[in-house]
Image (tube, rainbow, N blue to C red):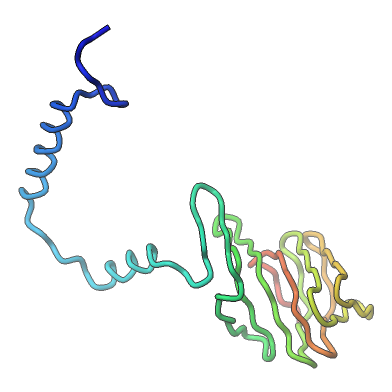
Length: 166
């Protein structure tokens, strides 16, 4: 067994000290450059904490929806809180809120869509759904306009590539 103390990476304290000095000198050897404002803003936006995101590391996301702002949509009377967006799949999990009387146009589902009614009602294909009801639309399925009489709050898992038909 060696008498020399090693760190977990196999280096000795003396080797680490030398490497640290080299790293410090390399940092001083370059001329500082101010990044373009657009690049700086993009980097800061990417690392800035998002409202309502408590934890997002190593494949685990914890979101506090009460701390997230509602976002308007092109549909009058409808707003969303994106909980998670899978950019690669163009798929999202969101809370969706519809004011009384709001109507959502007919559309084709690009991928499977799931909706769970947390509060209120929703009329789909002439069937009135209420709190606790669940609706699933398979990929490529089409349904007519949906609407709410009393308004509602829904949990929706849906493709961002759905095609509006109406």
